[in-house]
Image: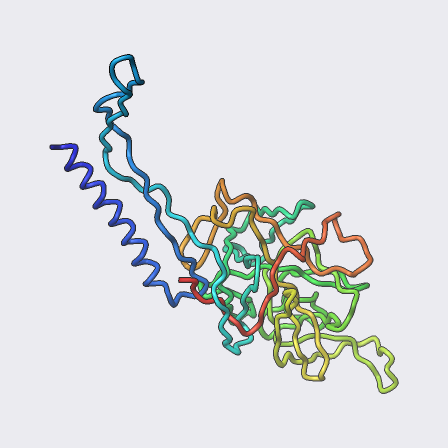
Amino acid sequence: MLNSMYSGISGLGANQKKLDVIGNNVANSGTTSFKSSSVTFQDSMYQSYRGASGPGLNLGGVNPSRVGMGVSIQSIVTNMKQGSLQPTGRPYDVAVDGTGYFIVSKGPEDGTIDVDTSQGMSSKTLENFFTRDGSFKVDSKGNLLNSNGYRVMGYAISYPGKPADNTTKPPTPAMPQGTSPKGGVAEYVDGESAKLNADQAHLVPLIIPEIVSKPEVDATGNLTGKNVEVRVQGFSIENDGLIKAMLADGSSTILGQVAMASFTNNEGLEQKGNNLYSPSANSGNALVRVGKYEKGVPIQGGRIDNGSAYGQIMNGFLEMSNV
């Protein structure tokens, strides 16, 4: 009698969990980049009522008779399939069309993430998360953030003769590229150059400045040796993650490159709420996409070009729920 009650109660409990999962899926059907879940059941242990016996001289064989003890949850699986991409027209919105997660961090504004030659990552000062939600924004200091204020991480970009730098400093006429707070000055990096190179060893918080300091050119096209400050009119995020700013004089400059990561087992990621994920023991470590580099030149730090394994970044789009 008691066993039958326990079996029935286990069924109620298991199906209640399934309803909880279904309800959560429905509730998040409009949540940006939400991944739905499904529940599978398994039968519980069995009690032997009568054992099996083989055929004999006088009687045939008898099958075992066992009484089940109910049901339990076997697994709750997250469906990591990509949702549809919806156009927004907003320059801060981006979506990944294919494999990859944006990297966002919580911690000091000068914190960095170290990237090793195997494309792994680590940080002593930052708490790092991963997301498919590309609804970004900019704060009063020009920091590129996700909706909850986590800093979007990426590569500092340089070109020949200009080292990549992304440390925060007071506004000066020749501040290193990609570093200024709002109202400050970032150093010019030719947006049309074919010789752009990322600092492959580190990821840094990305910043959108208001002003860029670029070399002054006279009427004959020669450099004067001075810098001129040019206001940023707008920006776009390219398919490879490069942040290209349009300047008031009609030229363009590169402010950095949005980084992406992938995992061996996406379904092993832990959901942290706020559309964020963190690695687990079964997801594998984060593998970081290689940054921009000059073609035909060995990549800094001995890294390999794994860019073809990642999806394209679509500017002006958001990934919808896959419910």
